[in-house]
Structures are given as structure tokens and as C-alpha cells.
Length: 186
Image (cartoon, rainbow, N blue to C red; front, side, top):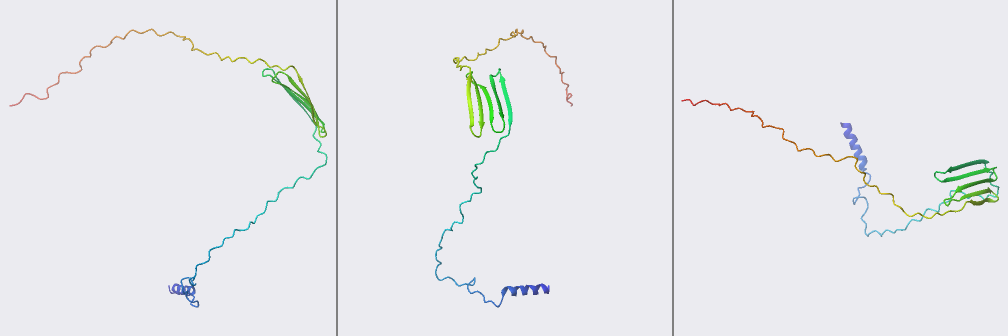
């Protein structure tokens, strides 16, 4: 216990520091004699700059484009039920693409397109039509037939005779009660 008290006293002396004079007015400074000047605000200078592009512009290219891959494909659809008829056929040797396609137009004609495409001449197409355009007269509107209620397939039931009473008066289920007391005694 004595050691603890001694340690506490030493700690108090260290904090008090007798070599330093006590402050005269609360916090160790004198009270101001005049009010402080008003604060002056100057906005901060911007510290940013315009963003730099994170890409480089492509260099102009005067070289020949790459050669394409050779291919050959075709497909066709002919569905008389739905009125569809179109096909496409195309071939390429890697430099020039040649092909043709046809499609059945809504006016009844068939459009045929034969084309050639390459890097020098671009896309060159020759378009022809087969058949005569047909524009049928529009039919007047006829509403769908209205449905009526179906005729009944059964007959109405015959009336049943009125029910007759089938009961009789019930027989009594009780008897004359017995006397609970006797003649008076004298």
C-alpha cells in the first residue's frame, strides 16, 4: 500500500511541475484588449487541369486492306402455305465476292439481285424483277357470323303430382303420473 501511495505522489508532482509558474488567467494567456479582425476569405486556386486523352489517334493507313477469307454458302426457303420464297447464294475467293439472291415481294413480283463486291469497286448490284405487280381490290368488311344459342337437346320435365301426407297421429308416449304423496295423516 505504501508503494502505491508513493507512486501516486510522484505522478502528481511530475504533472504539477513546480518549475513552471501557474497561469494567471485560466489558460496561460492574457485577455485580448481589442476584438480580433474579421476573417478574410480567398477562394482556393484550382489544382486540376483538363484530362489528357488516354488513347492515341490511329495513324493514317495507306496500305492495302487485308485479304478476306474465301467462302461459299447458299440457302433457300420456299413455303407455299405461308407465301414465302427467298434464297441467297454467295462465293468469295478472298478478294472478290460474287452472289445473287431473290425474294418474293408482297405485290406478287420476284426481285432478283446479282452483285459483285471488292475493295476497288465497292458493291455493284444489278436488280431485276419478274412478274407483274398485282394490287387486288380491297374486299369490304364482312363481320364474322354471330353465333346464336344452341337449341336445347332435352325436354322440360313433366310436373310431378302433389305429395300426399303419409303420417298418422302419434300415439301418446306418456302415462298418468303417479302420486308422490299419500293421503294426509291425522
